Image 1 (cartoon, rainbow over the protein chains, first blue to last red):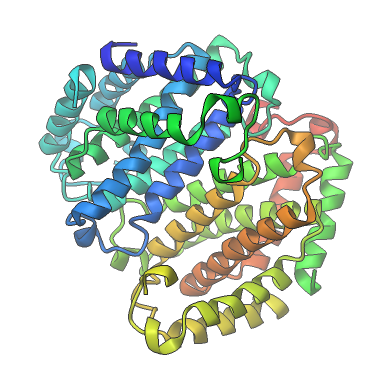
Image 2 (image 1 turned 45 degrees about the vertical axis):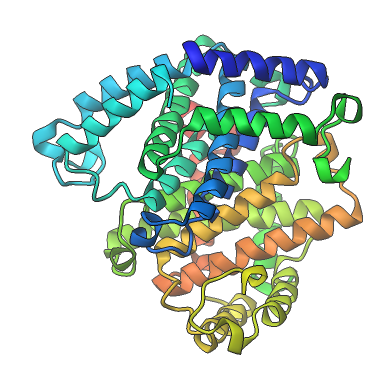
Length: 116
Length: 116
Length: 116
Length: 116
């Protein structure tokens, strides 16, 4: 894991150790907590139109930032618990997506690669 | 946004621009895509015991890494679209959590701060 | 639990018993499976505009019906496992919502009751 | 849609019409709201062991019943908006599952049908 995410991972590890929380932090539970936070993130947008979602107020943006933070904190802890480097995994995935979604075929098209 | 996550953010921005996908990438839609991927991540653990989830095979770990990547890719794009620095938000949240969950009160206890 | 949902509940109980699946069907696991299916349901809509989501093709409607079925099947099993009557719970909730969202204050307004 | 779920569907339709909420209730938005509620449902179980989740207190069961109600209310509204009968869809799915998961092959086994 690289730089600033690694710092975060180390801090989170200390945080959990000091509180003796590793017993609760099985990958299964961390993945549950992550999807719960992802739901709270989506809640901010559920009744907005797409246009409204592009123009949220400063206050709302801060609340959304809080939920983004929660998702990232669980994502980092889950990655640590499984020995996965999330940035490396994301880079690999991005390369795979470039092949699955060639520019010519996917321009202006939101279809899934197997429907292109 | 700092270092390696910023690189990822820039690459994702080019990726979407080349494909003219910004029209689909409203914060509302990115938050939906994120929770969908978080669900796919949880799917790997749903029938495992917590102990089994701590001991996944190398093959399964790779599949899980792929889903972690998807969650991170949408999290970064959502953050970019709203002008949020996810690492800074996570650091702020972690400081708030340290106050909400003092070591003495929360040691070995999985209760929410308002039930402590 | 009333009528046709009860039939479904009974069939699902036999289904799980015949396969010796009750060991996997803890409320925790059933709630995980439910949110995973809810994510698969949302996946059908994530890149559609709201208007497009109101006009899905017959083929897509069938696929969506399949995911609705999965959500309902887990919802019924979770309810059974906890001794909850989901229809009665929904009726109670609907009555509470009528008080939280009085017609005059909430007409044409998607705000949450505590923001009205 | 059959009996008591149909009553619920009709009541929900009046509820939304009286408040002029149909404008917000696109299938896309209803599917988002459903997954958000499914996340709130899972939140009750995220740090519990499976055993603890089988033995929740009466107070907690009521809170869980509230979330089950929310999921069902959105599921019914989504079904109505798309002209889907959720009970019929669930019955069809259950029959398909009986073929995908033959008793002999799946007894005591939580593997997905394509891994059996």
